[in-house]
Length: 228
Length: 230
Image (tube, rainbow over all chains, first blue to last red; front, top):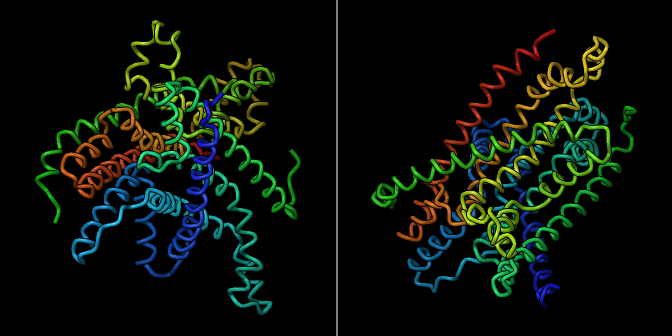
């Protein structure tokens, strides 16, 4: 049915998923740093985190990605020129992951900050009063409760992130979209391949939603639910 | 360091690109909203046969990347001879039409869900009171549910409008010369990636901040006084 392009498309889908997962790691890291900065006492750090989230929310991901990819290449070329190396090509996987991770790090910053603020301060104070160190209080008491508050926006964030990996094809990564385009070009059946790519993405998002639903149920154990 | 002359040379194309970005966003939002209103009402209907298709529509659109949808419409539909020979082909061949149509369908799905959520959030007591007054369902919808839901809907819709504005940058992938298209052209002409994309990013940032400000004003005008009411 797919004229022998099925395996190629699945390989591409794996690569897309790889970009999404690598970006997730980077985004969680940046989000944690951003949230710490946003909640810190230092005005400079708070300001920097604010600029970060505002700029990311105001610039399209495609523009950011083209800037990182072409701008990164120009930077690498200039550096290589100065030190007399041969300039390596910027890898689209790395450029794509850096961009998507950077973008969603800003969203995670807001999510983690909101989740931290949603846990009543008394919880932390009680943990400290029991003699826990601040780190223990975070890991044992505040953290697990933060996770529950953060889960719904996190799942949303992951879904948006998963879908935004499609644009990495535009800087030349042979991901799902790129391979679909190749197959579409050589068989002249673009609808078939783009529809298949869409279905694969739909499968990814559906499975993600199921996983998050399970997690949400699990983390909500111990929270009284109002009967609906 | 910064090549100001190249930016100055490209300014006219940035200006016309910004205009196209604005037009694409406005067209998509207006058309999407026009279809989202009835769909959101149907989404809350009692019959499963009504809710099901609407739910499926929003689920599929929200579960797939916009780029896939755009390519499916612009490149994909031409695969079928019946489409190529139909009356709609002159339109479907135009990148601008395909872009607006895809963006409108996309934002329509998100708007439908946001609006549906806002309608669900209307307190049951208000609806019951209205019905006890003898209002028909249509009148309850028009006088009680929608005025309240459309206000609650503003903050989340502001986000969606912002997303749409940025999503229109994908129009540059189907040959349209929007703001991103202008930046890509400048980059390929002068090979100045920083100048080209940072200029575009700054213009996007300004438009986004203006949009955020606009929604803030709308919230101050319609949402806040209404929430403050005892």
